[in-house]
Image 1 (cartoon, helix red, strand yellow):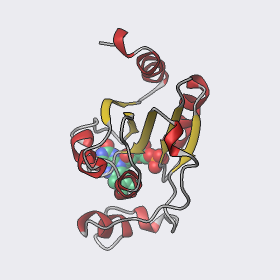
Image 2 (cartoon, rainbow, N blue to C red):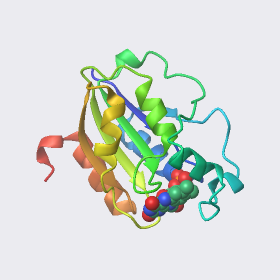
Image 3 (spheres, rainbow, N blue to C red):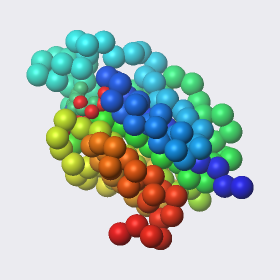
Image 4 (spheres, rainbow, N blue to C red):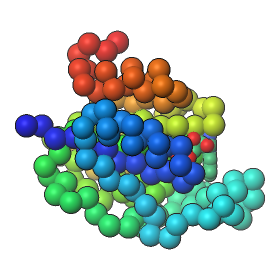
Length: 161
Ligand SMILES: Cc1cc2nc3c(=O)[nH]c(=O)nc-3n(C[C@H](O)[C@H](O)[C@H](O)COP(=O)(O)O)c2cc1C
């Protein structure tokens, strides 16, 4: 039987809620991508040039992840969820992605945002896959309708537009 994993990073809880609903509806396992050092409110204040989020982004820094997915090999579809930061996935997601072997895996992205779309999130994440795996979908989830539509797409990709 094919197995599905929902992975996600969430700094402020919005993406976490979406991920929990998705995992339930898809009967998938879940792995939360947590930075070794949790973000404080001050760390996320992007209006402050010296805030951690800006230092990581503009310093192109790796952000170490706590723990590892158990038996990553067993999954053939992996969903990766995140909040849009600066038009793409946060650095901690890049670090997470670069530390696994994605050979033969189908990868589907989902995100929440303050208003931006997915933009070039998929293209920006691609280099961290080291040429392995395939991103087959990417969707911004704004509400319950988007979530339902996304679930249908993930369950039967051929029927989606
Ligand atoms: C450092 C930082 C950068 C962000 N950059 C963007 C952005 O470029 N576009 C956008 O629409 N929202 C941006 N946001 C807002 C988040 O994407 C939005 O609030 C998201 O739903 C938060 O998800 P979370 O609660 O799972 O962390 C940013 C938030 C933070 C903290």
